Structure formats: C-alpha cells, structure tokens
Length: 87
Image 1 (cartoon, rainbow, N blue to C red):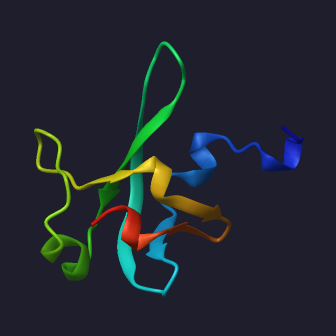
Image 2: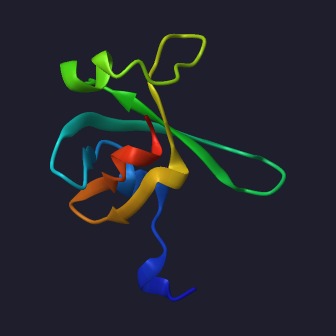
C-alpha cells in the first residue's frame, strides 16, 4: 500500500459521513476493529442527522449508530459511504 493511501485514525475522527448522493449522516466518532486481524468492522456515528436516525441502522449497546466500514467508498474531506450497503 502506498503511503498516500495510509491514514491515521486521528485524521478521520470528526470527519463528516455522507452518502455518495450527498446525504449527510453525521460525524465519525470512533472506529471498531478486530484486534487479531486489524480488520475495520464499524464506524460509530456521533451527532447523527435526523436522516440517519430514521434509517433504523444497527446500534451498539450504548445506542450509538454503527455503519459497516465496508460501506466506505472514499475518504477525503468527507467519509463517503455507499448507502445501499448499509440499509
């Protein structure tokens, strides 16, 4: 993997999460990963928008909305997700 493809988690935390059609979901609050393999499993949304709240997405035991990390299609100024992969 080239260095320009690597990102530190602190660079991602707080980024706005949007769908590829531009719908805003909230901000990236934290990342859940598998400790043995390092595989990224979920993103935890903070400040979820009303749109994200009405989708009835998976939640953790604290009630935080979880987005599968596999739905991420781009990372730049925003975390772009494929909405069809999460509903």
